[in-house]
Length: 398
Image (cartoon, rainbow, N blue to C red):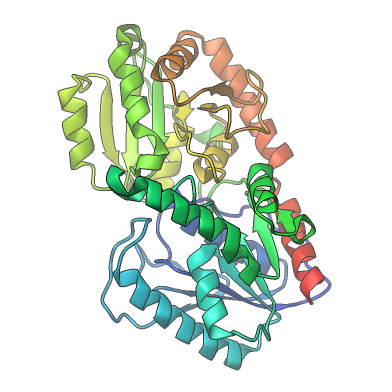
């Protein structure tokens, strides 16, 4: 799902020219691209001159209140999945060349690199660091990179991810993280803590989507849970299916919709193999509005990710949609169990099944958590505070 800005921040007294760099397709429905769009949109609304440099391709066309610059479509590349790919090396070299040209032409006050690929491109484009750089760290590599490789290579991939997390941030002058855990991890690896700022993901419905109170919940005999997102290994879909597979009472109490833009053929085969076709179904993601309504109209939003190293955008989406949410206790650290969300150890299929069954069995609990979700979104993920954190980081540079 996309996560967009619905609140206009106060206009900054100092107008900056900013070059945001992202090594990926834009726009798409993935959470990373959503946060890139939200960040650029909020900063443009605050009065800054915002430019975004990205790959040539996108999932759909959309007008933006900021300038979008694209690298040439050579070599041709249309993949929207996250993770490493050999062809991305050529694309990121092209990204660096385009960054160099844009930096020379625009003369930005700062380069804002979204994740490591963009930071490497910015460093190649300006090795003498004439333009200050901010790294917007969406996720750590050590807990995630190995999941894109076969088990035989996982140890090497973990070590490589750990080395990237330790060394790459030093190519930036300042770092923005999404949560305190990532900030602590960077500081423990040697990056100066005073140069790290937390900018919690801003919460608001996508433009044009109805407030949650105006959405008609689809009637049904049983409560309905929804997961909306990609099917990469780190998202925890395997444990979600295991929860339904190992708990017959859950299969009788709750339906699950998995809403995704990923290739779901393997997932559908696994659902059939486990005998879950009667209670678990896969639905196409559709438009941003379709995905938002799927979550906002559900009884329960499920965020099964337990992999550390980042804060899920889909968790913020669920909170801001005002839906009773179940998430991992180690990731959703700022949230209070039973008040803001229902928190479990997502590594345990049995604990997840018990949590889902508790939510399915109590309308009062779901209503209470839905109210708590909205309050938590406003308290912890305020767009104005997000912009202020970024602007203060820019001020330290300029």
